[in-house]
Length: 202
Image (cartoon, rainbow, N blue to C red):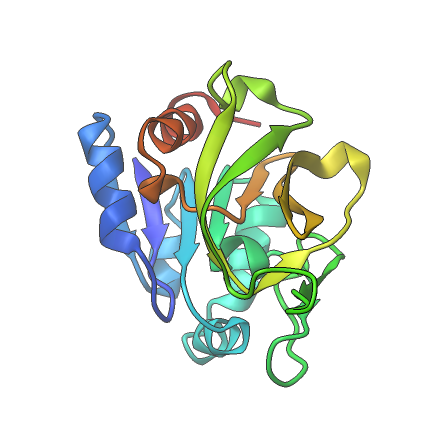
């Protein structure tokens, strides 16, 4: 069973439908009590970092989610905003802390050197964990204005470019985070989500 956590706003139905099409059982969860029962979880999201974290706080989900990921080591996938909240903070809006699964911070693309927002198909240069992706060149769909500039090499899975290079996929133990939208990325996304559902365990 793959659990998908409802965030402030997101692409939950698209992710759920793709997983169902691939033959996986899916449930949408939204409460603290439901978190304690999950075996594998996806955090999908679209929108504001601050709004997303405030939503988690208002619904008393932050501590439980951190324990689930860090203590229980449940296999976790963060998609777009779901990846961004795995970091410590963002330049977006007022200062707001993330879940701090990774210690790095998000920056805003400079419109003088990058496309803002960065929307559309882009190449993923795979650095590690190549088994998660198709053997050929991988292209994924992106939609974001904030980015991860740097992270430890051992946690870097993929790099993309929007004027400058940025980290577009990360991994640490039981956690994967991707800035792109696999649910909008056709066969590349199908392969990636199917790998997470079938093969990603600690």
